[in-house]
Length: 263
Image (cartoon, rainbow, N blue to C red; front, side, top):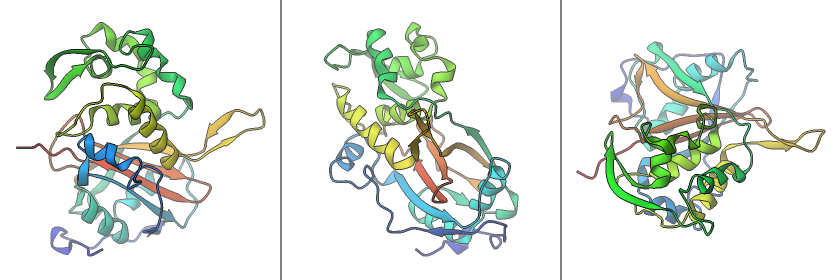
């Protein structure tokens, strides 16, 4: 992929980490003929990207920040991200990634039984509708959206602050809200199906000695590149950028969506 040289005022800096783009990496969700049509229907289109890199060095919890900074300064990484996302790094030396760690304790879709308990969906999976209302430029068209976004609603308490830091929650939330041309589902099953596929694509899991499933990956919700660049073309609650590190195979995955209005 060609690098957009004219958008940068300096060369990417050399760092202690080296990254290589894995162009042949396969996903069971993104670009999969069984799941990709959902992404198109929900308004993601070309504004959503999923890609995989390999980091050659070992990354520890202590060096994770350094790895993230190096990632968004790396020439090969920037070539891919500039071509496939709205990320624009103008001054690599000024990149200082601001991010929040996501929890990965929840590993079962039964987590979303709370939606039925709260009356947001029926026992058959039908999503309860409501009169449409805008919340910070996001249309609230059903009770799931209300529970996930509207802080003033009683339904907002369906999910605790701890729940909302779970990466499984975030995946489901992003798929439910989609993009500007979202054609909403009346039943929740397809959202669940796509959530599971994205989860499996992005996270590495194993069973520990007690037989419980544990997640090995570290998930960062990237919020800013500081003065080094910008993540999105337009501010929106629907934007997201996650960088996920798999310590077993030393993969670094990016899941990105930059909201683009229809007009």
